[in-house]
Image (cartoon, rainbow, N blue to C red):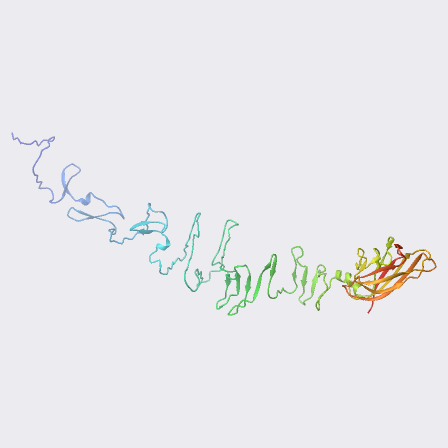
Length: 436
């Protein structure tokens, strides 16, 4: 019976300083087979790669080499069809001290001082601001420059019916374009045709409009606000043949035919003042009001409506206040005088009846005064058969200006007050204009 210093039974756990198994392959890993028997194996049998992530290469000596599909070391330049960076805010990426972040400002693009061209065929460049402050998109230039600060140019192809610039808002109080200029004459908007050096159409900062022929010609036609509610042009305004000029309530108040004939839906209103130049038109009211001043005819007939006491030895103005007629309002019933509305010759007739002392041989005088001072005519009364009254008559043709006034005055020397008899058959004056 053979014995061993170490246990070799099925349940033993021997400890050996070394063990050589001649049936195995040198320099290989040892594994067990399906029957739990020892065998040599390669590492490639135990490690599998992941497609597009880890590649396992059998070195044919029991070892393997692990690699990625492309180099990813700090000096490598890997290529990816796409990459998702979950820790970065969406937007344009940029590197800040070697750390990639999102929402890169445009001024941090490489070489921001150089010209930038974005080739964006079939693509869009979009900007979205939520509750912005200040000027969300600002183009600022300093110093002298030529051309345009912002130039939008369609230069190839035929895009059809489209727009180079469209402004759209959802709120009605949004102003699409705002222009601030240093002066009222600043060009806020202007248009050219290729080859022009001067504007064909201009909107100035004060809202005035100007047009020109283009080329090198300056603008020569204007339309602007001259006063509240007044639109003015410094040139001519021409409408189409058979066009109309009107208002909101009468759109064809004035119509002009192709031949230049002008017609009105209502009679035109002209000023009430007198025409003062050739070809000016006088309106009907002016003609009606002044036709009498242009021709001879009756003008004034007035009389004394109540007895008037007259002091002795004094020329007293007779108070002719009651009117039979006053065609042009030339008689002043408050001051008892006549002022002509037109210069010319006027015939004055007056008759006055005055009471005197019974048996007296004294008479009365009727006088025509000019401008309250000059006696143009006077006549002495006839006592008649009745010694208690005197009748005096005066007739005179005088030349008057529109600044002159005339009145009738009575004089007696019978002592005390004497009454001028009232009534249009006893004391009156008539004034008529006569032909030159």
